[in-house]
Image (tube, rainbow, N blue to C red; front, side):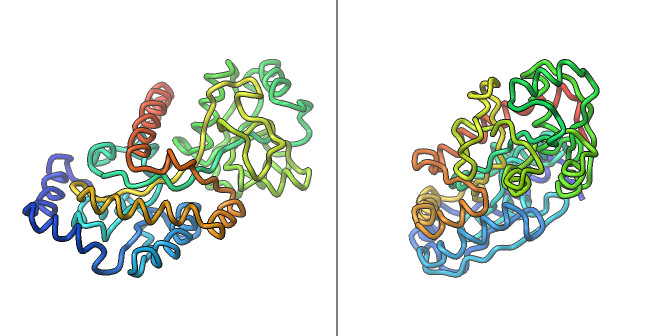
Length: 327
Protein backbone atom coordinates (compact mmCIF):
# COMPACT_ATOMS: atom_id res chain seq x y z
CA UNK A 1 0.00 0.00 0.00
CA UNK A 2 1.35 3.44 -0.95
CA UNK A 3 0.71 6.44 1.27
CA UNK A 4 0.75 10.05 0.08
CA UNK A 5 4.07 11.60 1.07
CA UNK A 6 2.41 14.07 3.48
CA UNK A 7 0.52 11.31 5.32
CA UNK A 8 3.56 9.05 5.33
CA UNK A 9 5.81 11.71 6.85
CA UNK A 10 3.13 12.65 9.39
CA UNK A 11 3.10 9.08 10.66
CA UNK A 12 6.89 8.94 10.69
CA UNK A 13 7.11 12.23 12.56
CA UNK A 14 4.50 11.14 15.11
CA UNK A 15 6.48 7.97 15.78
CA UNK A 16 9.66 9.96 16.35
CA UNK A 17 8.28 12.99 18.19
CA UNK A 18 9.85 12.45 21.60
CA UNK A 19 10.93 14.95 24.28
CA UNK A 20 14.55 16.12 24.11
CA UNK A 21 15.63 14.88 27.55
CA UNK A 22 14.54 11.26 26.99
CA UNK A 23 16.40 11.35 23.67
CA UNK A 24 19.59 12.44 25.42
CA UNK A 25 19.14 9.70 28.00
CA UNK A 26 18.66 7.09 25.29
CA UNK A 27 21.78 8.34 23.50
CA UNK A 28 23.78 7.79 26.66
CA UNK A 29 22.29 4.32 27.18
CA UNK A 30 22.64 3.11 23.57
CA UNK A 31 22.57 0.24 22.86
CA UNK A 32 20.22 -1.10 25.51
CA UNK A 33 18.88 -4.02 23.45
CA UNK A 34 19.65 -5.87 20.18
CA UNK A 35 20.31 -3.75 17.10
CA UNK A 36 18.59 -4.69 13.83
CA UNK A 37 20.10 -4.11 10.40
CA UNK A 38 17.25 -4.05 7.88
CA UNK A 39 18.15 -5.21 4.35
CA UNK A 40 15.37 -4.20 1.90
CA UNK A 41 16.08 -7.20 -0.32
CA UNK A 42 16.03 -11.02 -0.01
CA UNK A 43 18.81 -12.91 1.75
CA UNK A 44 21.88 -13.90 -0.20
CA UNK A 45 22.51 -10.71 -2.15
CA UNK A 46 25.49 -8.36 -1.90
CA UNK A 47 23.87 -6.06 0.69
CA UNK A 48 22.82 -9.01 2.82
CA UNK A 49 26.32 -10.51 2.81
CA UNK A 50 27.93 -7.19 3.75
CA UNK A 51 25.33 -6.68 6.50
CA UNK A 52 26.04 -10.06 8.06
CA UNK A 53 29.78 -9.52 7.88
CA UNK A 54 29.48 -6.19 9.68
CA UNK A 55 26.92 -7.46 12.19
CA UNK A 56 29.27 -10.08 13.59
CA UNK A 57 32.00 -7.56 14.33
CA UNK A 58 29.64 -4.80 15.52
CA UNK A 59 28.13 -7.20 18.05
CA UNK A 60 31.42 -7.36 19.94
CA UNK A 61 32.00 -3.60 19.74
CA UNK A 62 28.50 -2.55 20.81
CA UNK A 63 28.03 -5.28 23.40
CA UNK A 64 24.59 -6.25 22.06
CA UNK A 65 23.40 -8.75 19.43
CA UNK A 66 23.23 -7.26 15.93
CA UNK A 67 20.52 -8.98 13.89
CA UNK A 68 20.10 -8.87 10.12
CA UNK A 69 16.46 -8.74 8.99
CA UNK A 70 15.57 -9.14 5.31
CA UNK A 71 12.36 -7.32 4.27
CA UNK A 72 12.02 -7.51 0.47
CA UNK A 73 9.19 -6.07 -1.58
CA UNK A 74 7.50 -2.69 -2.06
CA UNK A 75 10.25 -0.90 -0.10
CA UNK A 76 8.78 -2.11 3.18
CA UNK A 77 12.27 -2.43 4.65
CA UNK A 78 13.14 1.21 4.05
CA UNK A 79 9.74 2.33 5.35
CA UNK A 80 10.31 0.32 8.53
CA UNK A 81 13.57 2.16 9.17
CA UNK A 82 12.09 5.61 8.47
CA UNK A 83 9.19 4.95 10.87
CA UNK A 84 11.30 3.27 13.57
CA UNK A 85 12.00 4.89 16.92
CA UNK A 86 15.04 7.16 16.43
CA UNK A 87 17.21 5.50 19.03
CA UNK A 88 19.71 3.61 16.86
CA UNK A 89 18.30 0.14 17.45
CA UNK A 90 16.83 -0.12 13.92
CA UNK A 91 19.13 0.69 11.00
CA UNK A 92 18.87 0.35 7.24
CA UNK A 93 21.63 -1.05 5.07
CA UNK A 94 21.65 -0.83 1.29
CA UNK A 95 23.03 1.35 -1.43
CA UNK A 96 22.89 2.30 -5.09
CA UNK A 97 19.95 0.10 -6.11
CA UNK A 98 17.43 0.63 -3.26
CA UNK A 99 18.64 4.02 -2.00
CA UNK A 100 19.19 5.82 -5.32
CA UNK A 101 17.73 4.02 -8.33
CA UNK A 102 14.38 2.87 -6.93
CA UNK A 103 13.33 6.29 -5.60
CA UNK A 104 14.16 7.79 -9.00
CA UNK A 105 12.39 5.10 -11.04
CA UNK A 106 9.37 4.37 -8.84
CA UNK A 107 6.85 6.67 -7.18
CA UNK A 108 7.77 6.26 -3.52
CA UNK A 109 6.27 8.08 -0.52
CA UNK A 110 9.58 9.30 0.88
CA UNK A 111 12.69 11.33 0.06
CA UNK A 112 15.77 9.39 1.13
CA UNK A 113 17.94 12.51 1.16
CA UNK A 114 15.66 14.06 3.79
CA UNK A 115 13.90 11.21 5.56
CA UNK A 116 16.92 9.23 6.82
CA UNK A 117 20.10 10.00 8.75
CA UNK A 118 23.34 8.76 7.13
CA UNK A 119 25.55 6.72 9.46
CA UNK A 120 28.47 5.28 7.50
CA UNK A 121 29.74 4.43 4.02
CA UNK A 122 30.57 0.74 4.37
CA UNK A 123 31.42 -0.83 0.99
CA UNK A 124 32.10 -0.16 -2.66
CA UNK A 125 31.73 -2.79 -5.39
CA UNK A 126 32.52 -1.63 -8.93
CA UNK A 127 30.85 -2.56 -12.18
CA UNK A 128 32.90 -3.34 -15.25
CA UNK A 129 32.30 -3.88 -18.95
CA UNK A 130 32.70 -7.45 -20.19
CA UNK A 131 32.12 -8.98 -23.62
CA UNK A 132 32.09 -12.36 -25.27
CA UNK A 133 35.52 -13.33 -26.54
CA UNK A 134 34.36 -13.44 -30.17
CA UNK A 135 34.31 -9.64 -30.33
CA UNK A 136 37.58 -8.59 -32.01
CA UNK A 137 38.30 -5.67 -29.66
CA UNK A 138 41.19 -6.24 -27.25
CA UNK A 139 40.77 -3.07 -25.16
CA UNK A 140 38.21 -0.35 -24.45
CA UNK A 141 39.40 1.92 -27.24
CA UNK A 142 38.96 -0.87 -29.78
CA UNK A 143 35.64 -1.86 -28.21
CA UNK A 144 34.24 1.67 -28.57
CA UNK A 145 35.48 1.75 -32.16
CA UNK A 146 33.73 -1.58 -32.81
CA UNK A 147 30.46 -0.26 -31.36
CA UNK A 148 30.69 2.86 -33.53
CA UNK A 149 31.39 0.73 -36.59
CA UNK A 150 28.25 -1.30 -35.84
CA UNK A 151 25.69 1.29 -34.67
CA UNK A 152 22.58 -0.21 -33.13
CA UNK A 153 23.68 -3.76 -33.90
CA UNK A 154 25.44 -4.86 -30.71
CA UNK A 155 23.38 -6.38 -27.89
CA UNK A 156 23.87 -5.57 -24.20
CA UNK A 157 22.35 -7.72 -21.48
CA UNK A 158 20.56 -5.98 -18.59
CA UNK A 159 18.58 -6.93 -15.51
CA UNK A 160 15.64 -4.81 -16.68
CA UNK A 161 14.74 -1.15 -17.16
CA UNK A 162 16.15 1.01 -14.41
CA UNK A 163 18.49 -1.69 -13.12
CA UNK A 164 22.19 -1.19 -12.56
CA UNK A 165 23.34 -2.85 -15.78
CA UNK A 166 20.80 -0.87 -17.83
CA UNK A 167 21.83 2.47 -16.36
CA UNK A 168 25.49 1.57 -16.78
CA UNK A 169 24.78 0.93 -20.46
CA UNK A 170 22.94 4.25 -20.82
CA UNK A 171 25.85 6.01 -19.14
CA UNK A 172 28.25 4.29 -21.54
CA UNK A 173 26.19 5.43 -24.53
CA UNK A 174 26.11 9.05 -23.37
CA UNK A 175 29.85 9.08 -22.65
CA UNK A 176 31.01 7.32 -25.82
CA UNK A 177 28.49 8.42 -28.45
CA UNK A 178 27.53 4.83 -29.26
CA UNK A 179 24.20 3.06 -29.77
CA UNK A 180 23.33 -0.57 -29.08
CA UNK A 181 20.34 -2.74 -28.20
CA UNK A 182 19.41 -3.62 -24.62
CA UNK A 183 18.29 -7.19 -23.94
CA UNK A 184 16.47 -7.48 -20.57
CA UNK A 185 16.80 -10.56 -18.36
CA UNK A 186 15.22 -11.62 -15.10
CA UNK A 187 18.40 -11.32 -13.14
CA UNK A 188 22.14 -11.14 -13.65
CA UNK A 189 22.72 -14.91 -13.66
CA UNK A 190 20.76 -15.72 -16.86
CA UNK A 191 22.24 -12.66 -18.60
CA UNK A 192 25.75 -13.77 -17.72
CA UNK A 193 24.97 -17.31 -18.86
CA UNK A 194 23.85 -16.05 -22.28
CA UNK A 195 26.89 -13.80 -22.54
CA UNK A 196 29.24 -16.72 -21.96
CA UNK A 197 27.25 -18.71 -24.52
CA UNK A 198 27.62 -15.89 -27.05
CA UNK A 199 23.88 -15.13 -27.28
CA UNK A 200 24.52 -11.45 -26.44
CA UNK A 201 27.60 -9.32 -27.09
CA UNK A 202 28.41 -7.63 -23.80
CA UNK A 203 27.08 -6.24 -20.55
CA UNK A 204 27.87 -3.97 -17.64
CA UNK A 205 28.15 -6.35 -14.73
CA UNK A 206 28.87 -6.26 -11.02
CA UNK A 207 32.56 -7.13 -11.34
CA UNK A 208 32.60 -9.84 -8.68
CA UNK A 209 29.85 -11.73 -10.53
CA UNK A 210 31.80 -12.25 -13.75
CA UNK A 211 35.36 -12.35 -12.42
CA UNK A 212 35.49 -16.20 -12.50
CA UNK A 213 34.43 -16.17 -16.17
CA UNK A 214 37.08 -13.57 -17.02
CA UNK A 215 39.72 -15.54 -15.14
CA UNK A 216 38.71 -18.70 -17.05
CA UNK A 217 39.07 -16.89 -20.39
CA UNK A 218 35.38 -17.19 -21.26
CA UNK A 219 34.80 -13.41 -21.16
CA UNK A 220 36.93 -10.33 -21.79
CA UNK A 221 36.95 -7.39 -19.37
CA UNK A 222 37.70 -3.93 -20.80
CA UNK A 223 37.51 -1.48 -17.90
CA UNK A 224 36.44 -1.24 -14.28
CA UNK A 225 34.07 1.67 -13.62
CA UNK A 226 36.02 3.19 -10.74
CA UNK A 227 38.57 5.87 -9.92
CA UNK A 228 41.20 3.29 -9.01
CA UNK A 229 41.92 -0.22 -10.17
CA UNK A 230 39.98 -3.03 -8.55
CA UNK A 231 42.06 -4.93 -6.02
CA UNK A 232 40.65 -8.29 -7.14
CA UNK A 233 41.72 -7.72 -10.77
CA UNK A 234 44.41 -5.00 -10.80
CA UNK A 235 45.39 -5.77 -14.39
CA UNK A 236 42.10 -4.29 -15.70
CA UNK A 237 42.35 -0.51 -16.35
CA UNK A 238 39.99 2.03 -14.87
CA UNK A 239 37.48 3.92 -17.00
CA UNK A 240 39.77 6.96 -16.89
CA UNK A 241 42.74 4.92 -18.09
CA UNK A 242 40.63 3.25 -20.76
CA UNK A 243 39.54 6.56 -22.29
CA UNK A 244 36.15 7.06 -20.62
CA UNK A 245 36.92 9.66 -17.92
CA UNK A 246 34.38 9.97 -15.14
CA UNK A 247 32.48 6.78 -15.97
CA UNK A 248 32.21 5.58 -12.36
CA UNK A 249 29.54 3.03 -11.44
CA UNK A 250 29.49 0.86 -8.33
CA UNK A 251 27.06 -1.16 -6.27
CA UNK A 252 28.05 0.75 -3.12
CA UNK A 253 26.61 0.16 0.36
CA UNK A 254 25.75 2.56 3.17
CA UNK A 255 24.15 2.47 6.60
CA UNK A 256 21.26 4.75 7.65
CA UNK A 257 19.26 5.52 10.80
CA UNK A 258 15.72 6.88 11.26
CA UNK A 259 15.26 10.66 11.08
CA UNK A 260 16.01 12.59 14.30
CA UNK A 261 18.36 9.92 15.63
CA UNK A 262 20.70 11.71 18.09
CA UNK A 263 24.16 12.51 16.74
CA UNK A 264 25.75 10.80 19.75
CA UNK A 265 24.05 7.53 18.74
CA UNK A 266 25.05 7.93 15.10
CA UNK A 267 28.65 8.60 16.14
CA UNK A 268 28.70 5.46 18.30
CA UNK A 269 27.35 3.28 15.47
CA UNK A 270 29.79 4.86 13.03
CA UNK A 271 32.68 4.06 15.37
CA UNK A 272 31.56 0.42 15.48
CA UNK A 273 31.48 0.28 11.66
CA UNK A 274 34.90 1.93 11.37
CA UNK A 275 36.32 -0.61 13.81
CA UNK A 276 34.87 -3.45 11.73
CA UNK A 277 36.32 -2.06 8.50
CA UNK A 278 39.76 -1.86 10.12
CA UNK A 279 39.71 -5.53 11.15
CA UNK A 280 42.03 -7.73 9.07
CA UNK A 281 39.55 -10.62 8.90
CA UNK A 282 36.76 -8.34 7.70
CA UNK A 283 39.07 -6.83 5.10
CA UNK A 284 40.02 -10.29 3.86
CA UNK A 285 36.37 -11.28 3.46
CA UNK A 286 35.64 -8.03 1.61
CA UNK A 287 38.28 -8.92 -0.97
CA UNK A 288 36.89 -12.45 -1.33
CA UNK A 289 33.40 -11.00 -1.91
CA UNK A 290 34.57 -8.49 -4.51
CA UNK A 291 33.87 -5.58 -2.16
CA UNK A 292 36.21 -2.67 -1.50
CA UNK A 293 36.57 -0.85 1.82
CA UNK A 294 36.17 2.92 1.51
CA UNK A 295 39.20 4.90 2.63
CA UNK A 296 38.82 6.27 6.20
CA UNK A 297 37.88 9.77 5.02
CA UNK A 298 34.86 8.30 3.19
CA UNK A 299 33.58 6.21 6.11
CA UNK A 300 31.94 9.08 8.02
CA UNK A 301 28.26 9.93 8.15
CA UNK A 302 28.87 13.27 6.43
CA UNK A 303 30.85 11.59 3.64
CA UNK A 304 27.91 9.25 3.03
CA UNK A 305 25.49 12.19 3.04
CA UNK A 306 27.53 14.05 0.41
CA UNK A 307 28.10 10.97 -1.75
CA UNK A 308 24.44 9.92 -1.60
CA UNK A 309 23.39 13.41 -2.74
CA UNK A 310 25.92 13.36 -5.58
CA UNK A 311 24.66 9.95 -6.77
CA UNK A 312 21.04 11.16 -6.87
CA UNK A 313 22.11 14.28 -8.79
CA UNK A 314 24.17 12.15 -11.19
CA UNK A 315 21.56 9.51 -12.02
CA UNK A 316 18.35 11.59 -11.96
CA UNK A 317 18.98 13.29 -15.34
CA UNK A 318 20.10 10.02 -16.94
CA UNK A 319 16.90 8.27 -15.82
CA UNK A 320 14.78 11.25 -16.86
CA UNK A 321 16.41 11.45 -20.30
CA UNK A 322 15.75 7.74 -20.85
CA UNK A 323 12.12 8.22 -19.71
CA UNK A 324 12.40 5.39 -17.17
CA UNK A 325 9.46 5.65 -14.79
CA UNK A 326 7.35 2.95 -13.16
CA UNK A 327 4.34 3.56 -10.97
